[in-house]
Amino acid sequence: MSFRAWLSVATLILISVVIYFSRHELIRAWDLLERVNIWILLLLIPMQIFVYFANGEMVFSYLRAKKSIQQLNGLTLARMALEMNFVNHVLPSGGVSGISYMGWRLGKFGVSSGRATMAQAVRFSMGFVAFIALLAVSVLVVTIDGNINRWIILMSSTLAAGMIGLMVAGIYLLGSKRRVEKFAVWMTRTINRVVRSITFGHKQQTLAQKEVDTFFADMHHDYIELRHDKRVLAKPLLWGVVFTMGDVLLFFITFWALGSPINPAPLLIAYGFASVAGFFVVTPGGAGAYEAIMVAFLAIAGLDQGTSIAGILLTRVIILLGTIGFGYLFYQHAILKYGRSS
Image (cartoon, rainbow, N blue to C red; front, side):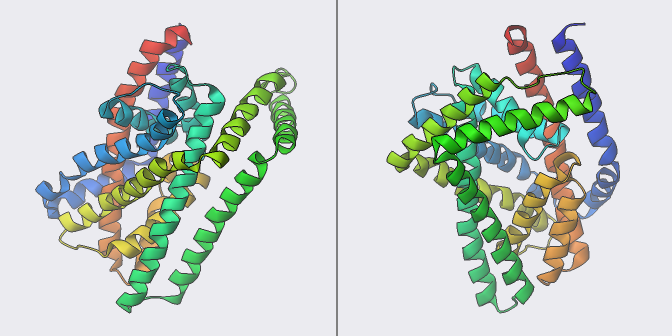
């Protein structure tokens, strides 16, 4: 069997694993359909496509500003973002698998691995900045609303501080060529050592130091250019705001379809906590922990627990089915089209 054939088989196996672990949620979501307004719920389809488009634009608006890629149509952007989300679902790794996949995909358009990773670093950082701005507005809204719980303020502040800390650490690392070079050496040695331990010495080298050095040198170069031309971050930031609002609106639409419209402010805060948890949970898409955190937070905010479970569970299952179904088709097409030259 060819590499592409093995990869296709492995992907199908991973999809089966995802569905198996999500089987209880799928059954409960099916039962919830009896009480939902299906016409309102169908709004999730165009909204999900738009969210994927906005997600892709956070990367491509940066690459276009750097003149690293030709103009692509909106459907292509949404498709590639959907492929990335599909890979992140079937290979839970805190977003690392999606970053690697997008690096490979962007390479087919002539984008270097370092610049592709930098584009995704911009996506993450501008997404953080956009979320922090919306988080501040949300905390202000729920405070004015008068139903604020002090724990919500504390948790929101902690979440914002953690995100800011991650961005500061990344800026500190990329701001110095010497620090970047030392980190590249440390990372290469550490990963190779871990792999040797896991394989009992059968695989001596996983990463080549020269390739890692080139990769981080590209990222450092892009960062230095960013410091001198911050205007290229304007569009990724704007799309970050649009993406975050669209992602939260997916949940709002479901609550609306269930006949229980919810204040978007506490919903956005709950979404932020659940998204962060998804980076650290090894289940597909953070399944289980994601839903539990959102339900718990909305319960603290005063929303009925039964309504919270229904709205969040139904939204997550529909997103999962869309991501797995369409994502697999686009991913498989990309593997068949580009895999031969990989």
